[in-house]
Amino acid sequence: MKKVLFGIAALAIIVAACNSKKEKSETETLTKNDSVTVEKKDSTAVNTKIDIDNDGSLYISSDDQYHFRIISKQDDSKPAKILLRNDISGRIYDMERVISASGEKYQDADGNYFWLKGDDFSFGKADKVVAEGSIAGKPKEEH
Image (cartoon, rainbow, N blue to C red; front, side, top):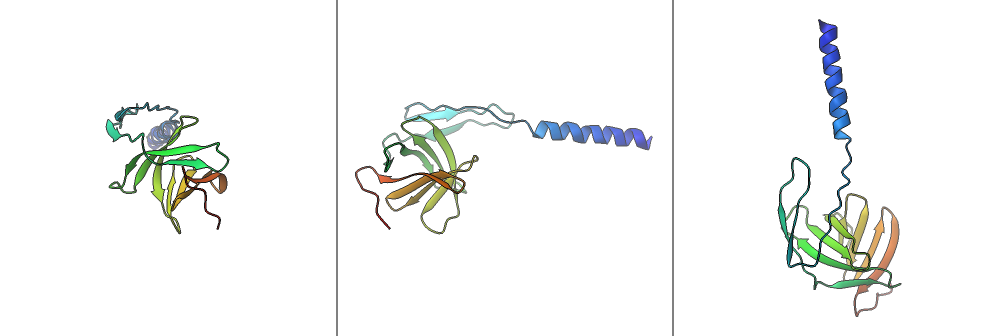
């Protein structure tokens, strides 16, 4: 009897482990609207209304390859969250504020980060800087 119960328990653990490894490969696209509702398709999803600001500050990399705009900022959430759009590629990054020594640093689940220091920014992944620049119309300060 103990072997049967042990076998059932082991099978339940294996099934639970397999179900927790499912990858989410959903792509969410936002269009230029005043607000948008994003629906995730898992069982714990809720509809979230997000106010979109298409006129927010434009951050341009010094090589002009990246144009970033913070289209939504939620300072009242813990941690603070932003939606960052690359205006050239159209990609949107869902980022949360993380601890930084200076400035405001936001990071997404894939390790991409957007780090603001005054009018300057850097964008990268892990410890690699991909782009640096400043708010449109202001040259990047040399340190």
